Image 1 (cartoon, rainbow, N blue to C red):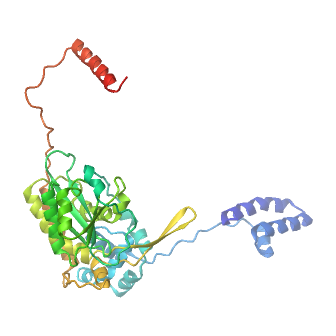
Image 2: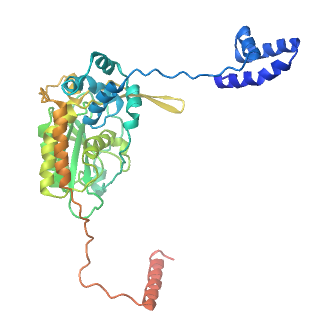
Image 3: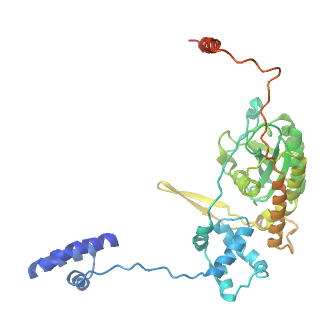
Length: 407
């Protein structure tokens, strides 16, 4: 019996107890003790005394406004990470935050002790927005798609070098014309992410961008896994993978969970930064690549911790997931016994965030605001049909449709 049910039961028995005789009260007490598990003396005080008001205990506030201000400053500068990642960021960001804010010893101790759940509770009033919208421009590549092996099972790799790749379209509200794509690539073992901007999704531009990513990786590239889009499933791309001696696999069509790692990075590394604006100029292409190759590369790989799924266990109808401790891609790279230069040595994350914000603001001004016109048909426009001619045309079209469908 729940506490609320016990209180309701005792309140109902109180009136019966007041009107009962001495013998009947003994029987009622026996019943109440058996039903609620209360001690007999406590049951007598409940039934014979005045009704007791139930006072709900309030949680004592441990973290004050100074802790909230420090958390908010790091949370906003780090581009709004979720609580588990934010907790892992605190030791990295706190020394730089102390140069900007007055943090006493008690606040510092609270920031080191605070849990992820408490961070969620404190930041709940500030966690509002972010409407998510998706545009999918993946198109099947025909016969060649059946020649490339499918990888649908869970990745089980412990060495860096196995990448999932995808394109993110910066088309705005129109798919017409040529616009910029972001080629996103993430390593499975470490979470190391590299991104390049390309104009259109032609084979030459995609291969050149991926080759630039390959040369900039701090580890040798071993294999690539993509979706079934024609930008990757083409003979030029297959030949390039063969030339570089890379293992090339693809995911199943309409199965985004096959590429879950890169789908998550598409949002955190591209959409949260540039949104859903349209970029179609060469100036925007150069500015985006300059940001992707420098500040944003250091930001994502050296100052943004992430968690990795360790195992999944089904308990009844629920699936329990266990994750490891949050680590940055650079920290995971070092744990894999790989050698990499610490490009973040002496880099202030707050200054880095300000530079990234300024660069994104400048790139946002380059977004195209004009709607892309639909292609016009060749020749003069036909004259409007009369009412009778339009009726005849509709009847003829119905006859043609019925004939083609075998009616």
